Length: 271
Length: 152
Figure 1 (spheres, helix red, strand yellow):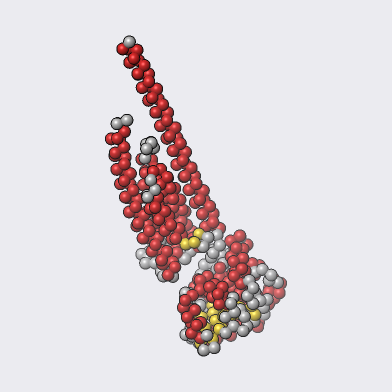
Figure 2 (figure 1 turned 30 degrees about the horizontal axis):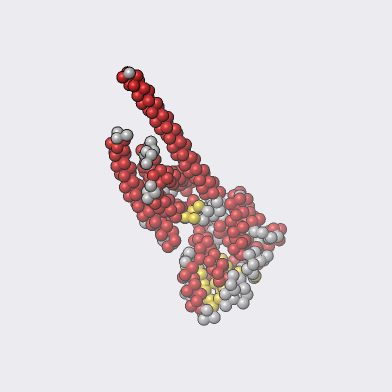
């Protein structure tokens, strides 16, 4: 009797132990699956993030070839939407002709600080003050960063005139802002005919044949020269130099990638 | 059943120690990422010991993910891991591990970009990558340590 009870108890204990072991194994497996699932989700999220990071818009290391990429098209599309519905005139002016305040940017298309200004305070200026008709934005040329490129002296008037040629079709600011967004490495000779053509092809609605003819016209090259002379006469030597002019006169020229607040207070001081 | 108590006790205290370590590292991470986020939005240059490397890295296209500065993403990550410590049980442990793993893998990618694409190193980014690496180890340890899930 005693041994039978004992046997029964032993069998029960074995059963319980087995069940526990099985439950533990199942729990561990379930857990492993959950941990694996979490890891998988993490990997997928990072993979997506890397894909976005590798292809995402923004200033890539440009070469003419990269201007046909999806990222370049995305950059151009961002410019198009930022400028849509804003009038362009006189080959370098953005905004209403009757705007009270005129903001003139002396810039160099290869200058990274000009790019930063365009991406920051410049884009806010366009979105707020230019769009509302309060400010008219004018682009003029002053060589700075391009001077550090091996072909700087020869390419500067050519690239700046390319923007003005787009301006002849009221698309100058599209060209300028797209160029800024897709700038290459400062101090290299990435700007060439293929690069300038590539930017032009990214500007929606531009008559490419007409632009090609216009950009070599001597009047535009002379205009660039006149801008440089004017900047030199005023003693400007870095880009962007921003001149704010309004009914109450002219504010102290602003230099560098300033924040929007600085720009605003200058605008308010003259309007 | 009484045997469960002594085996549970050390594992609880280990978990506690891991939580404290994770919290401390998260706070350091928040300080680093917070500094970089502040620098980014204030338009300042970071204090840099690597000869302009930080600026190069911070102004590169890889410093932003679809327009969001990676410093902000890092800051959110550290905060999320810290908050996950407040969640009881497995959910908190797994959430912490998941976020840390995302942070770690993305840090690996960014470090790769620093070394091979941008060819500049920023000690702030490197220190964040190291912190994330430690965090993924600690949060993984928390997940594995808690095994088997003691029914409560």
